[in-house]
Length: 253
Image (cartoon, rainbow, N blue to C red; front, top):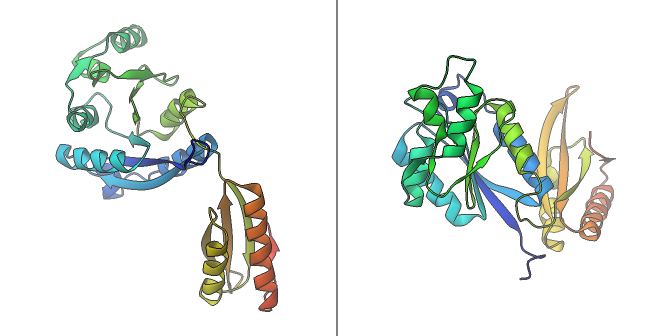
């Protein structure tokens, strides 16, 4: 497989008791997945884990072993339960150190906000050998060590960190998508979806059912890195739906 043919993937570990308890609704999965797609990288797996060091270590090691990149969100703040840096350092087998650039950034940021203190200085701790990801929203930077990237859990801060990484990760060709909608239960065309997908290597079909206006329907989202493959798959799906007597809507319903 050449570099251009390689399918680059990423894993994502969402860290935080507040997510698992339902007190906070995660918004990072969608924005990380969308951002990665533009970078030519596919989000392959997501795990949501509690603020437990050994559990974070296990998830980080599992997903970074299976993917080209590993992202985490959450747990890099100033409080005692922000243990992501410690857990990732343990997973990587390196010590935690104070990053002097991060210390300087935090010192400047908090100069007129009461100054630096022990809690705020925690946000300058990084796994040894890491580099910083700029954070325009607050003084605390994100962290990157090789293919492991640690970001804030607050969605708009994570979004800024992603923006700072745009174009800086090695990746493959971005996915392109087309949607076909149909007023039909997805189970009625399951075999057709399988046939079309199998006939078009490198194409994925996602089925997203809905219930509207008292009727059942589904949108079929076709994805590929190859424009010609995607067009052929869309044409085959539409032909199959028409042959079976189903009306369909290009672009989705």
